[in-house]
Image 1 (cartoon, rainbow, N blue to C red):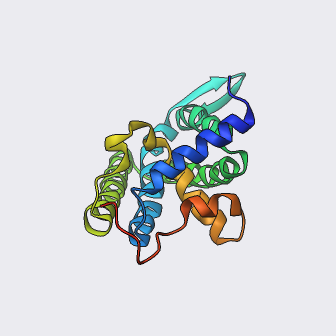
Image 2 (image 1 turned 45 degrees about the vertical axis):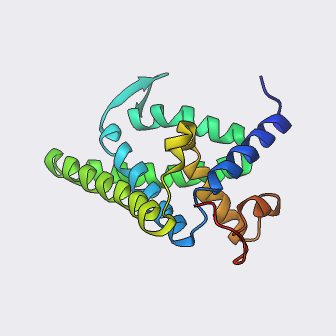
Length: 178
């Protein structure tokens, strides 16, 4: 099992690879929108399925989100806690929607959220970044998007200067890797 410093090094190496595919600020903005829409959409139908766990009804959305939330916490506790807080809000939104609308409307909202989320990611890469998504070359990067977005938020708020150098924009006079 990796120690905390090994996980931090692993996370920083993965983030350095990921950022090479996400240099354009508009692509980053599209990822914020896309990730929020995709997470909410993907969990929406799962909030309607409840499973008893130790005598408490827990939604399938929470059960399926737990392993990836633990993974994010292991990669970086601070960033992981930020994602956990966002996940609680998004799961609450999905649960509220699921409890307030008909099944047909829920599936319609699910479809719209997924299409818009994928669309935002696609536009970000095709139009702004002009480069294929990183998960094409590195499938594990599928799980790094939320970490990247939360790291950018922490840096913008003045936290996590240790990650700022990794996520810094390229100088305008540098050669592009596109």
